Image (cartoon, rainbow, N blue to C red; front, top):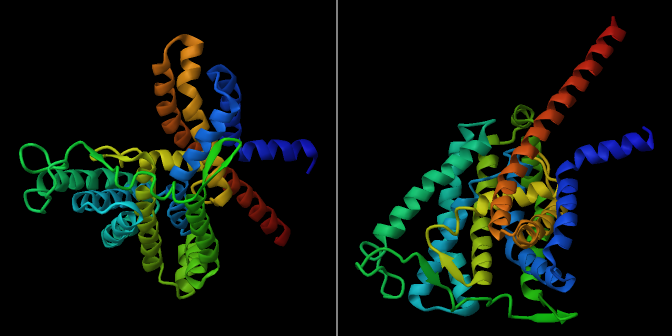
Length: 367
């Protein structure tokens, strides 16, 4: 293979990251932001979003694609935060209790989601997307009508004036930046939340370790070929369910980390875009439906959220309307998923065609 062919192959395999590099290269000068400000904002986004995106890796390993059902875990995390806000438990103990509350809910929802996805083999992504919408309705019914009426909520700051239902916005002042501010250093005036990054690093190490375990190897085998894995004695359906449960539990924890950074819970909308933006960021990092790693997570967070930071101001300075940048980044979120899925299907068909040609050539030689 010549150097030109290698370059073309590299560009073909990394079309989306290269496209975002070009967008950011044009957007940064137009935005007028200083390098110090951009680096500071990107670090905040890495600390805020990385845990959620890493939670997507396990289902991809098991061949279940991009788990849009991670929003189920996000809802579980939000329920935990509502309870600790009502009980007045602040700081790290409050975060830990919210995680404890979210865990059994996430396990139950992950098991249920995995059971449904086992009935929709080959269509897991669209099915998990629809499951997220369905569970959003159940979540809103519980939060809007159940809490305060059936589930005791004592805080008037949380409950709507009618006496039941949670307000649109919940102030998380008790846990706001509890983890981020636990241990922070400054480099060139930029705050670095060391404990938050340590937690993210531990999750990354867990994922790397998990891939080497018996269960991780089983998931890899299932992801490569379910029938071969079943013939080898692996419980395929059970393994797939476990991958979704792990992803859902981590998504719940990630949502709690995400919201402690922001300090405010938008009760009915915070979880809605989490799945879409997390999937888009992972794909921007060069991941595919069938293959993703830690490098894709962090490259995706940097490129995707750098575009998010610069696009409103770039739109304002270029055309005079910051709102155009807002529309652009929402459009890009959906567009990058579409482009990535199309490219994945094109590559898969190309690989199948090449495999068919090789097989035909071998058969001719045999004859």
